Amino acid sequence: MPPPAPARRPAIALALLVLLALLLAGRALADGSTTGNNLAFSLLAGALFGLVLQRSRFCFFCISRDFIERRDARGLLGLVVALAVGCLGYQVLFGAFLLDPTLGRLPPGAHIGPVSWVLAAGAFTFGIGMALSGSCLSAHLYRLGEGSLAAPFALLGALGGFVLGFLSWNPLYLRVMQEAPVIWLPAHLGYGGALLLQLLLLAAFALALVRAHRPPAESGPPPAGSLHDLLFGRRWPTYVGGILVGMIGVMAYFRVAPLGVTAELGSLARTGVDGLGLLPGRLEGLDGFSGCMTVVKEHLLSDNGLFVLGLVAASLASALVAGDWRPRRPAPGEVVRCLAGGLLMGWGAMVALGCTVGTLLSGVMAGALSGWVFLLCCPAGILAGLWLRRRLPG
Image (tube, rainbow, N blue to C red):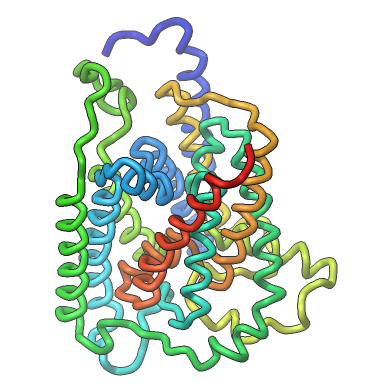
C-alpha cells in the first residue's frame, strides 16, 4: 500500500490512536469476571458495528429514502440480507437455549415484545422522526463520528422523547399493552416453520425490490486495488454491510444481549427525570418486557452504554481514515427539525421498546411478530415524514 499523502497523515494517526484506546479499554475491562468480560465485549462489538455502519452507510432512513425517491433498492436489499443472516443464526442459537419452542417459554433476553396498536403507533412515529431529522438514531450516532453537528440535537430531542414516553407509559400499558399478546413465531410454527416463513417473506420482499430497482448511474472510476482503497476508498456495498450486521447481531445475542442502541439513551433520560421526581412512582409492567430496556442507572458503565461508545469511537476512526470527517454547522431550520425528529423518535422507541435496531433488526431475527409489525409500520411513518418535511420552511 502506498504511503498516505502528507495532508492525511494526522487524521490517520488520530484514527490509530482511537483504535488503540478502544483496544486498551477493552483489555482493561476484561478482568476475568462475567461483568467485566461482557463490558469489554460490548465495547468492541459496538466498535465493529460502528465501523460497519459508517463504511456501508447502513442508515434505515437513508436506504428507505433512496428507494422512495430514486428507486435505488440496493440499501433495502442490504437490510434483507442482514435480516436473513440474523434469522438463520438466531435459530441455531435458540436450539441450544430452548430445545422445544412450543413449551410456552421465550428464549432468554430476546427482543420479543407485545403486539398492539401502541407498537404500530410507536413505529409510525419513529418513522416520521427519522424523516424529519434525516437519520435513524443509530445513524445519528455514527454521524457523530463523522463530525455531524446536527446529530447532537437529534439525540437531545430523543432524550426528551423518552421522557414523554415514560409519562405516557402507564395509561398505554394499563389500557392496551397489559393484555396485548407477545407472539414468538417458533412457539406456533416450530423452528423450521418459523424460519421458512420468514425467509419466504424476505425473499418476496427482495424480489419486489429487484423488480422495482432502477440501477443508478456509476459515479467516478473504480478505486485502485490497494487494501486502503478496498476498505476506505468507497463505501462498502450494502450487501456486505448487511452480512456483517447480521453476523454481529447473532454474536451479540449469543455473548451479551441483542443489538440495540436506545437502552442507554432511555436509561439516561429515566435516571434524570427520576432524580427530579418527575416520573410516576411506578412504571407498570415496563421492566418485565424484553427489548431495549431502560433502568435508573446506579453504575456509570453498562453494556449498552459501552456498545454505543464503541460505535461512535470506531465511526470516528473510520471517518478519519476515509476522509469522511467533515464538520458542518447546521442551519437553524435543520436544528429545529433534528430536535423535533429526535423527540418523535424517542417517544416512538420508548413505547415500541426499541428502534430500528432493537425492535426491527433484533426482533425479526428472533422471530418476533413485533419486529415484523415495526418493519411494516415504520416505512409508512417515513412517507408521512417526507411529505411533512417538504412542506416545512428551511
